[in-house]
Image (cartoon, rainbow, N blue to C red; front, side):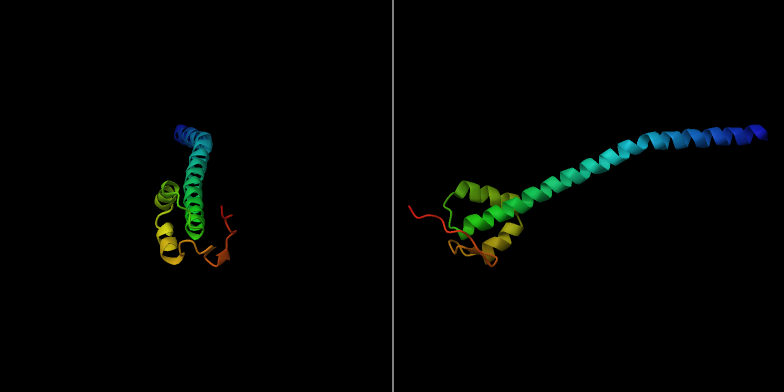
Length: 101
């Protein structure tokens, strides 16, 4: 009977040690997922801001407008519906005027 308890203790110690050793790997995996998700969110936000600014200022650079629209979709679809092209105003914010010339 005494060996059964000793075996259970050894097994418990082994599993605990293995779990403790794997803890940094689990934390690292969660951290990289969070960073990756945060990076995608940042791209989406900046694409939306960029598209809103280009639309409000009446930018004729269709290449960058298209890239911003695709990367920021579906938020840029809302911007396309709400912000008038060349209005110098996006979502209630007056944008700096582009110099004429």
